[in-house]
Length: 319
Image 1: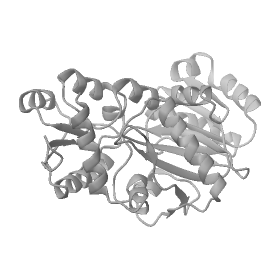
Image 2 (image 1 turned 90 degrees about the horizontal axis):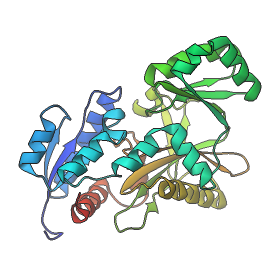
Image 3 (image 1 turned 90 degrees about the vertical axis):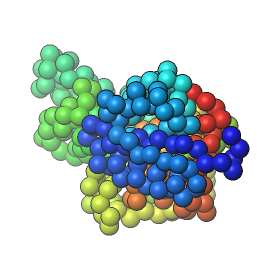
């Protein structure tokens, strides 16, 4: 099929994760952008009828705009590959690596990236070994301010910044609400940035670095998706050397995790200009307040062109 011909594209949005509403917003914007680019687009929820439908209809491409485990843990991506339906995004194995924050951090650290010192705890071990004893060890091993977060998931759900030890037990409860694994890591103070990466010709390229400044000081779920609660700087206010280091770190993480097509790498850049890896997202948010669309706009292109290139890349690649 020539590049002048529109493709049949199924955009997946919704799901049953905690991020369903965000996914629906992302999906609608992707569908609108692809329609504008000349494709025949259908927006579908990943329900029990999805796989039979795809097996029968055989769309040219699936564009998952799902967030949370329903789209990002690799399961759906592997099922699409098994069906022989091309999909935008990383394959199942890479998605699993990025979905697990401890695994992703270990891989990035092994590749030479800077990763905050952390302790990873399963919920079962936390209960079995006794919360008071476990928390005491954590405080001795990781003095100072901490960040407690679920071992998987996105949109900052279940994430707590702990500046007072008395708040640590509650932070653990919040993290375990969203995952059976919690990560307790040393808090890195600096500028929080997000770097979108697009790969449509075999070579990943970084979009404009977006700096995130939430009005409440914490980039929470509300700050991410409620307009006006966060100020974004695109381009960021880092100096040229820090931008180069952050961009190189993001691209290195993308490659180390084996990601493809589209990803977003989140970093904290400290006062020395060192970029610290926080996480990588294989299906980043694409809502009106999300970081990748902001970066696309700041990179002198538009979402329709980027999403068009992504679906055509996936179609040429096949499943």
